[in-house]
Image (cartoon, rainbow, N blue to C red; front, side, top):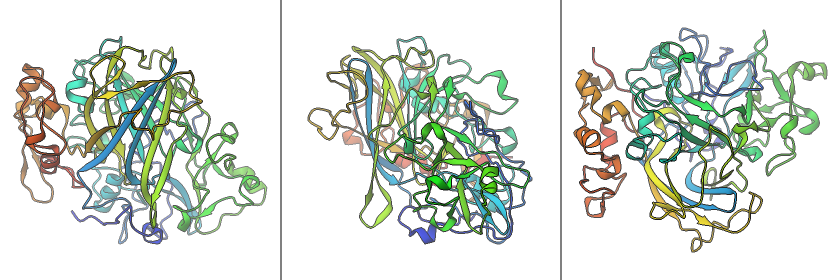
Length: 539
């Protein structure tokens, strides 16, 4: 399996933005791996489940001698991503500050006019590889390019609350990752968009704080979601249980007309006369996003460019030109429980000489107790469980960085992360997180998870006799997790035996009985680790 390598970040913009299949216009609505009700027709009340994958036999574009551009694919991508977190709270509001280095990632997916027709640009990098390979099982085979936003997320659990999830502190986000999840070994494209969910024997609900750096951050917002058990309305073999909270999310997804035209283009009254921007300016144009009328005055760059109906633009005299590009998502004000989290104060600082790579400082805020049952209520004197993830380098699904589960205390005693109580109320006055003497910095190494699943951790695959093979070498992938009995019988967790990086000399297991069992930095590459083909079940 040969990857087409486009190093990002670090490459010049002109090298990143490549036309993929000239002369093959298509109208695709592939799943973007993000599972958030991108149901093709713009859904003004969209909630969750991004089930928009195309027919796997739709090969009208993204194939042939050229194939898609796999932006972000870097064979030398580090296994470890250094990450820091600080936390604070006042009388009624919680504040998190998270920081890491990565790509700017404030672009997602677009429509581009080429050879007289509109086509979709952007999508899941592994779908791009499936397109190159014409492998209908491993993903969508009609992808033109793999432009994808960066994100930072964490799942929050109250071990003493009504939605407590037993085992989350021990397993972390692996509790929600399964062998049949999207791009995992036993998943096939025809199974549908299987995403995060809790096992049938694990009740409860995880609160997911989801900071989207392309589909929410430009208007100063985040996204509020939850993860639970799979429910019956998601179809045989499809779906999971990562859902948006009740209400309206921070973006809507464009429909396409009968001629493949996008639902919206830029309102020229808000862009000095432009209805679109040139595709070659994708990563540098100030018009990478547009909003509806509810969000025109939101965010640090307000007033924002507005998206208007395509038909209205045509009536105003718009005729698309070669390379015209417009966003597929239109950002908007959130409503209801899904709009509980804001992102005031978030910044991206480019590295010297590279505007597409630098340091993200994500600041997100939410009421301690929103009063909504789909949120984890926070209170002074308590300790909570938390696990982080970062999507960077235009990747998603199992290619994003994750952490073990940690603890965060709001004045509740010993914990990995100490939230500092400050005076006042509301989210208007942000803590000065640059003052590390007042707000302690917790350093965490995130790691790429490979195909580590809940079933693997508890030894279920070994018990079922499932074997995986490496598609490139034909060799078997070891499916035996020797720590399974410690997890199931002794109540130990991942951190009791593993570190993300480091050495045995620095290892201090959180629980008695824990022991050093090698770093994730060493182990994960042995099991479908860094940008490698997905292992598949042996026949």
